[in-house]
Length: 509
Ligand code: NAD
Image (cartoon, rainbow, N blue to C red):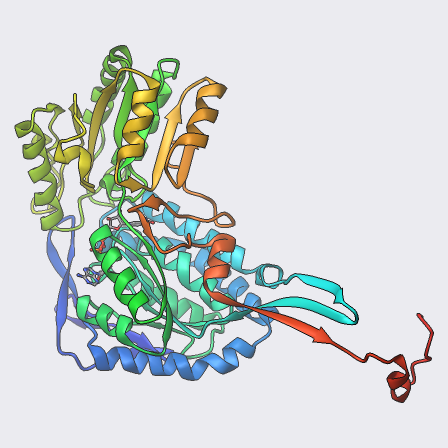
């Protein structure tokens, strides 16, 4: 249970099915981004706290791994019901700490629930290949067995969905898990773990430790952790991938992005502008699949697009998550706000045209004067060498790059260091087909601005958007959280030996 101290909640870790205060004596303040008030204090786990969580997960592993997959699936069914029943409450917890609108919070939770639904079919996903008579009286088959204790390290921007890309898949495959959510908004993960306990998950199978780099390093150095899933920024992901791999762990690290939308001259400009509004400014641009670059083929497309976009962006309703009809909330922290402001300045200094400056948007909501709000911005005539183009801003800023041809636009996208998502907007099947086959990107949309794969497909970028070889959830997720064993078996060469079982030699009935 959280304890209350002058309205500021003191959070605890969740280990072995109960609250765990740990003994680090280090805390991080959690702020409501809409008014900058401190609403909670989160403990930051030290090496010993991590060791306690891992020891419980290790103890729980043999019985859980031995639990029939159908029984593990039954817990996932009950978990899904509890998630649906409590979805409004979860969205509220999430929005209060993160700042995103309740609609965005509910939408992302729904995508997490889809992963749980995928895991209710774990019996099917774990079925193996069988080859009869690979040689005389010899059959061969595969087993997919759990790894042991796995860990997940997650970012602030999707406090429900991203952890749910990981632990439902790992658990239903028979692993136990230690989750380290972002220290900026950990309450959703704690609540999800408690719901899973209510659904019947045995103690110790899922543990949540809140923490920072010290906690992450303890995870990466712990011998009993067999695999690490990471989602977050590229600098941290690359570090985690190398350190985890050096310590002989299986690592998948899904990282930063710069997602382009290529707009062909035949695209419907009104529909494209509408698609950009949701995909650039939704969640205040704090999505790894947010579109942050529109590449127009021809100047006419850029001019027509700007005409449609500017009034829509100006009219975005910005405010706290609880405000009726709100379309965009604040950024997560003051640092994020300052970082975005820094890019607005840098873009102008480097020669781009700031056609709409979100920092000039006046927000007047009583009680939110100190919130980390900024309006939507648009840069035009952005060049590939500018930092607003090369860097992931992670704020509500769109850069328009004017390309002379489709080929130039495609090359631009392929030359970017990130390769998470990209979309083409066009009415031409030929252009769409060429794009999907030739773009160097992991997740591609055709007239779909944010092509996030559904739970039974897998999510993952290319280039510096993913380190390791495995995408997340779907069958790639099942493979990541299991190890392959191949059995080659010979039985009773001589049918006469079967007499003891009352088989009639020579009978095939
Ligand atoms: P972040 O990298 O700062 O933090 C992610 C996690 O790493 C957190 O749990 C944090 O505590 C931990 N961490 C932070 N600094 C660390 C360090 N020096 N050493 C070890 N661990 C550290 O990311 P964020 O700001 O929370 O999230 C935003 C980033 O996540 C963006 O770059 C976004 O693109 C990315 N993201 C990627 C995907 C994807 O699927 N590719 C999805 C969501 C978010």
